[in-house]
Image (cartoon, rainbow, N blue to C red; front, side, top):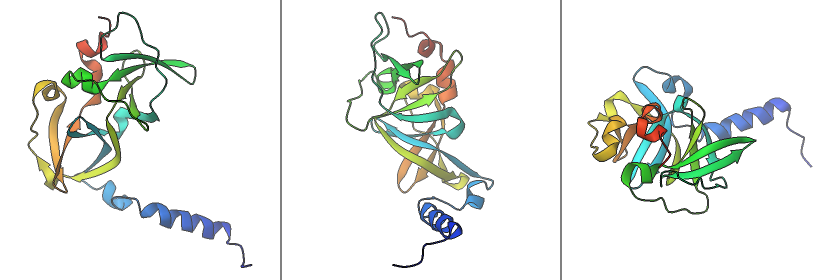
Length: 177
């Protein structure tokens, strides 16, 4: 049996393994012209929102429907003793219900009056972009209100979705039918 690694060697090994998954070096992530966010998919669209707009990412919680609510308001979930509204973001934006599947995720965003969870189709995790990859956003429908910029990365367009603007939208805030 070999010698046990020291606490320092264990931490160094953790750091080496975690850096394999980092898109860029820490210095690069904070460099001017570099922007990072949480990547996700709604329908066919790849979206990304700022880290400070997404306060938590959770598996789809058990939801209790709320009578008289808009169809896109799935209901409320009990999250650690706090009731959290859960919204089908695809239904709100596109008029089409999200197909639920195992491993479904919600993004928890802060809004005046309390947090709200938005259901997404797929979570991609952290994404980083440089100003030189900026492209004109191609958005229509309700997305026009929430997307002002986009990036092209590895042949994919990522539209920057403004969760703060969504939270201030009167229609979003009025969930009663």
